Image 1 (cartoon, rainbow over the protein chains, first blue to last red):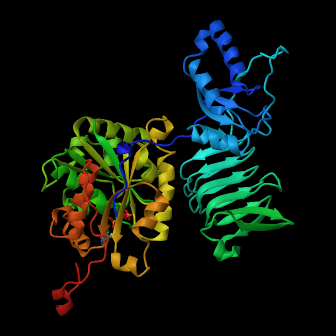
Image 2: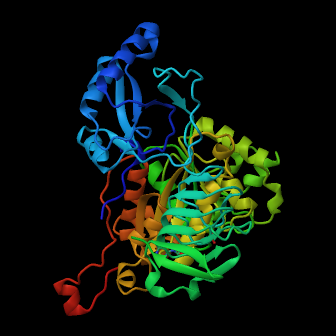
Image 3: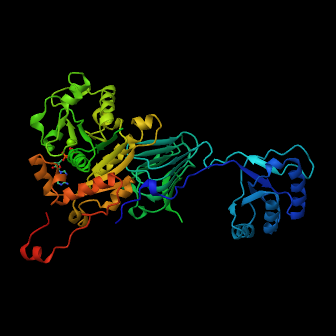
Length: 244
Length: 272
Ligand SMILES: Nc1ncnc2c1ncn2[C@@H]1O[C@H](COP(=O)(O)OP(=O)(O)OP(=O)(O)O)[C@@H](O)[C@H]1O
Ligand SMILES: [Mg+2]
């Protein structure tokens, strides 16, 4: 048994961050066309190309395969640093990983990118995207929710990155997600959203409620305790299933 | 500038006063100029445990109300040179303890001392909140039982929301877990929560573990903080705790049930 490490001596801490990130939305998979456009851009606005990190988006492309390595080389030659790829199928994901890049899935209901009015094929391919919020209109809470504390999201989902201890209460208009043990009370769909759910890594909850339908700890099948579960309303019944 | 450390718990009778006295004594023995303040108005106890109950003239509330100066109210410890006690009032009304008053007293003590230890009353009401309000660090005293852990969790919530550091958005109070009255045999038999479970729920840094020990009762009856009893397990465990508070890396002791040795098996003696 060792004592836990003093905070001052930890080498790092993980922080969630939302950084503004330039997305390079590719409309052509041809590295040579990309090179030509980048070169003309570079002469127009050299200030932009200062080892700027970019996400290569291939969402608009219909190519199952992509000369990703060459595209990256073209970018680097113009002082753009590809850090991740967005969109594409499994093979693109695998090659991104093989190149040491991250991969993001296609953005389903992303607001339509502001297209430049020019119909020119060489129109702006560089877009500055607003930070994406994991729970739109909702709330992310980092840390332990302790006995006597209440954390709520009156709109959208509530995401708790940490434990919800016994005697604590979390509420959301939408769903409740707990990345840690849920020992306290969790109420989802507090304004009546019957589609809302409760998701947690470790179920020990004192009370689970979706749109006013609840289960107390006593009512929960003991074999589900300690498991990763989702809780949903199915025909007015609160249904608890294990995840994964 | 003194470091202000509150010893708190939520639940009553878990060993706050015992720990405040033992930690203050340990810090002073290590050469730090230390004052320990009793915030438990109406149930003053610290003076008994420190063995100075017969020398109390003025108390914290007298000082706050301007009826006595700090130097008149503070009692110098008989055993350790740089240790002082500021007792609570046994008779006065709790409401006499005001936030401004406490701030003023802590402010003047800060200039003179290295450490100010605040012995909090039980509960989560005004008295407990005042004791923690100006703290830089908190020692959260917890017994290995569910209700005590729950109350400590509650106190941790208040520490992060109802204190000056929280209100002013300053660096949060440094929180330490001190587990007291730990009985490894009863933990093994399932009567009590084990160390890992407590740490997992409270999720704060463990500063020490004090075993259940007869030495504590003996010490409090004699009015000598248990830190002075270096033959005892509890006394040694408090010295370890103080070392860790001072930033030293000391291995944990007394958390495992000891296998009975040959002699004690022969003669049926237990561990004390
Ligand atoms: N490690 C220990 N082993 C055995 N007994 C202990 C130990 N620690 C404390 N005690 C006993 O527990 C009782 C309560 O201790 P103490 O007065 O320090 O608690 P407290 O938290 O200050 O109480 P209150 O909430 O009333 O202020 C005392 O009788 C004390 O002797
Ligand atoms: Mg006490």
